[in-house]
Image (cartoon, rainbow, N blue to C red; front, side, top):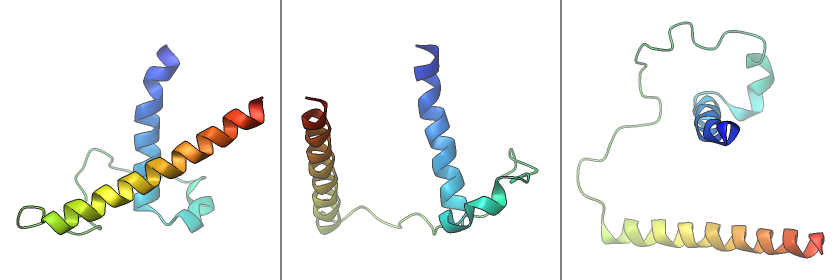
Length: 85
């Protein structure tokens, strides 16, 4: 259970690394120190927060994308189960 508790923070760190650095250039970052001041705030490279509430159209787009991802994951999972049998 102690290993499982570390999975989420590790995935979050990996996600943040990929978002900060180009995934195609990852080899150059494996051998050097990425951030000498990790506790210091950095400029937002990914845009700003929205000024207003989420629109109904945006909610529907997000829901459709979520459902598509879930369906794809379910199909992949079913394929894994079939391969195990």
